[in-house]
Image (tube, rainbow, N blue to C red; front, side, top):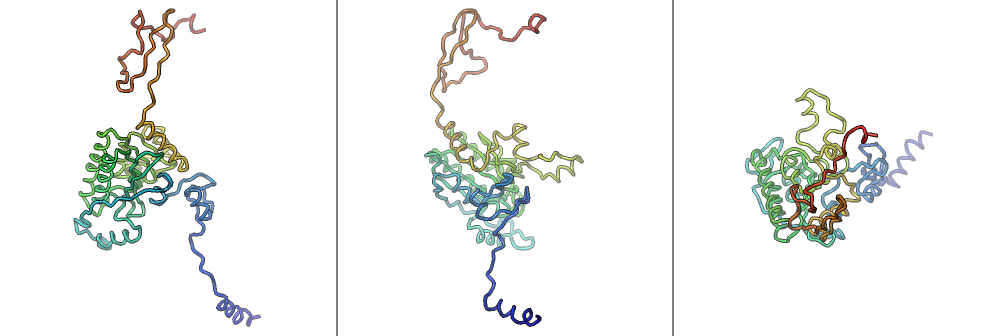
Length: 335
């Protein structure tokens, strides 16, 4: 049988040939370990159908999900100094930038696009984590400033989607300056009375989380996203304590008031459209139904959206200045 094994089989392999099978046909879920066919994973927006784990998603796929009909227009961000410090580690920083630009098709880690969401003008600035870990340098700062100014010009809401490890070390103090510059860009949008919404994705850390990422009028997060400043291991070694398992997750931050809502990827577009609609087009005035006090009915009050009531503004006035509605204490009331 050796001639079959040593001679015939190799000849058959040469004749038939072996088809090249891509290595990425199947992907393992990092949460539950289940193997998922790549087409099924993409069709489910890179969310595991077994455990619901949200895997990282490409920046342009993100934009297609959010904009109406997946249609949007990217803008060119201003040119900046590519290597102001002439930095070099294992390779020159300028060469590293060219490598990532060729790999991702983007000038830097932030992609700015504008289009419609629910028929409303929207500008989205989304981070590309594949570009040097979404790190923030001068280019990212200029791109976010351009996004803010475009939102003001178009009278559009601004949505920022962070996915970043923080400031870019190859640019030193110049990268840290972008924390202040991007914050000023956000202030311009807010001063114009336009909504500024942040969609926190995995990961949102470092200088990005310490600046514009936490300044949104509404903070929305994807399930399981890691959100924080310093890394978990660094914190544990500093304070010499064990942190909770869910520490720095989107759900943990929502429980502690740092995030307004955690929304599944499939529901993000609908949720964001509803939020923008509420912020841009407040509901009509409504009549407040008065309470009965001591047999007297107060005068109905129509809500004034231009001058909302403060804590000192009474909802209605009766003959009495006020009525104490606090339950009385005592044996006869405790039964």
